[in-house]
Length: 612
Ligand code: B12
Ligand SMILES: C[S@@+](CC[C@H](N)C(=O)[O-])C[C@H]1O[C@@H](n2cnc3c(N)ncnc32)[C@H](O)[C@@H]1O
Ligand code: SF4
Image (cartoon, rainbow, N blue to C red):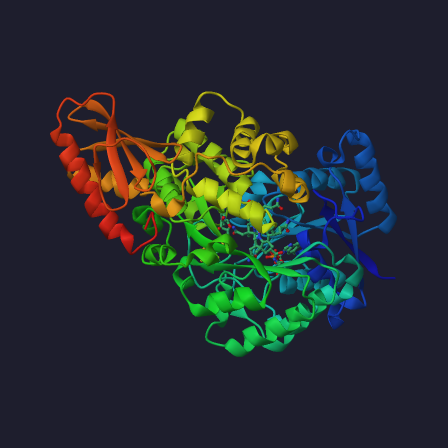
């Protein structure tokens, strides 16, 4: 009789049918498809999958009922092996289950793999509930484990594996870069056509050739497979009811820009399902490549994730991305019509970043017309180079998942809270408002408010709850109807849907916005004014006026800029602006310096978009 390997999925979400989304558990499905085709294990082992919904994801279900349900499901299969796939978002819940299984079914061997398994000596100390753990790619090690178990051999010598000895201690076999040929892997999507729905993920390659210290994608280098195999998988997904597909390669453009025939083949497959929308990752350096525009047009692309992570050169050097420094300029050469597709990704607080450099990066991006930002909290992941150097860099992070970094040498805990508030509000707004008119409203409003990050931080510092804060911003952008629809429970996507449906009734853009092209970026203003002895402290918008709160030789001075075509009193006029001051002025020479400075600045910025 065959013995059973039971993969237990810890389902944190459900798809439309009440199952855990297939695309959130791809490793389990891939391993099952692969192993059940391997001649040395398929005759001795049977592979099954069960889903377990932890109590927190089941609303009010009591813990004991959900545990009973799991034990019932597990016991029914009478498994020899129970296997878990561990990621930062499920490792704690899976570990709890593993501990329970070990206690109630001591005859079962509990095996685990996935990106959380790294630094194995340390991992088994933090999570002692698993009997066997596999680091890196799972195909070959799991296969060897099953072959060894079948013939009663020890797991000694299987690379990348640690296992519990009979005396309870762990043996850690050597690490070795040993991978299954990627072309030997089956098209695992085709094994479960009924599970393909919603948002699909595909990796045409594994790994990455870069070495950003916080990231685990690159741990085993870049590995590619034949175009034929990859296109077969794409065909399977394109033929399914999935609505959206995300290419999860580190940079789709860099991978294929020299091989346009592959991009042609992908586009041709996706064209068979014109309803399916597409998303992929690129690094900032290739944004000005004409192939990007071409791809966006041909593939029904709705989102391109642009890896920037920080706009601060020192930080980029410290996290192993010095090559991004040269790409920052490219971001500011991108034509405006592409910007609605681009979601710029940033991480906070990376080493070397300060609250000031963080604000400056975001202000520059907003000033240049980037209104879709995804700003994520830094996780100091086990196995990453950043984690190994965290102490030396002065990073303090949670020892338990999700390993958030909460303090650095240059970012205090209060600074980090301000960063988090800005990240939450701006990233929430970046959810796709599918309707172009909503998107336009969002873009015009955000880009007319280059000081939005500081305003958000200020409100958060006053103790305003993040949801309420997002509600305030939503109200300013979409009017009271938007505020009323926004449920205040992080459901910005629902808001956009509702607004789309009620778009005709949505209020017009508040009058206070001015076209972003007419505004001078805060960062550029700050630099230029500093050169003439004026310290820029804050920028706010008052209708079409950009108000500049400044300090000259320690004295507060309020200056302003008004687009030249707008009526209003002023001190002097430059080519594009009416320039003036509010209140009284102790030394009129300040205005001479200010006017000269603006005239020079508008000249240098004329050829570039604001913020460049
Ligand atoms: C697709 C993807 C997503 C998707 C789907 C996530 C999901 N719930 O599944 C989306 C876009 C939603 C996503 C979001 C996030 N992701 Co993500 N994501 C990926 C990505 C690109 C591919 C993962 C994948 O499915 N690969 C295909 C499978 C087959 O490969 P695999 O996971 O590596 O599995 C192999 C081995 O690990 C091993 N293995 C896996 N399970 C098991 C089990 C056993 C028993 C054995 C023996 C072996 C084994 O064998 C497999 C085959 O070789 C990876 C990066 C990458 N390129 O791998 C990041 C990655 C998994 N994500 C990561 C992170 C941090 C996130 C976020 C937390 C980011 C954020 N800050 O918000 C969010 C969290 C989302 C959530 N709560 O679910 C990290 C995870 C690090 C960690 N220690 O867990 C990764 C590794 C990227 C990184 N930063 O380094 N992500
Ligand atoms: C891994 S990158 C891949 C995209 C692209 N190659 C790049 O360089 O940006 C995808 C996103 O994952 C997130 N990410 C990766 N590692 C992270 C970590 N340790 N902490 C927080 N977010 C992380 C970042 O938002 C990043 O933009
Ligand atoms: S962040 Fe992007 S470029 Fe850097 S290692 Fe990860 S996948 Fe590669």
